[in-house]
Length: 263
Image (cartoon, rainbow, N blue to C red; front, side):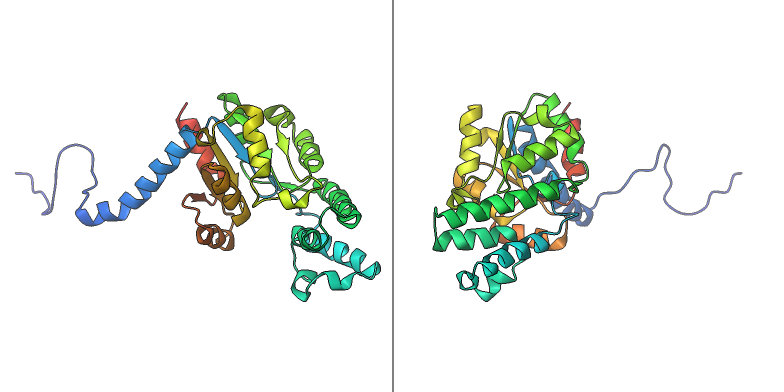
């Protein structure tokens, strides 16, 4: 007689018993994954923000230093009072140029300030750090037939220079839309998104915007384009969620995996 230990036994491989409790725990994750899969699957046109989803532009030349250089230039001209105290110490150089533009729109001062920002961005591009999984994601999306564009508040010259350095130009060309000398058209204004959509003959519902800032979400909303937030840290996640973004990922590997699973 063979003695068997007491307990639950069965023939065949072990299986996981799914109770109503475990189903409740896993369903939200499964639903989020399926919703994200549908978002990716339906995107025939993909609009990428540049600094964030594609690279960290200011990895080697911090954005805070760029902002300080612009503020110092204004102060050297005796124009310190153009900025509030908060704007003088803000780490985002775009805040500086947009603040000056609000007070002196379309002026020679704004044009020169924008040109200085472009030169500093070009300098930063030489030491920009690629966002993990961005390059293979871009190449895969282009390979499966989706059309790609860049819609950014950075200079289009900077984006083009970076794409060339990574061998990604053909994935986007000629659809690189960035900051113009009319700074009022920077995101959250949807101008660069609508330029991309019109140039590619894309309906907003067929497109997907990938961005990492509330201004990206606001521009996508205004253009009627579905949005996917890239949140590389908890602060970005909180900001995107607070702006109204319902779909976010902490790594582009998630998007790449779902895109490849559709093949």
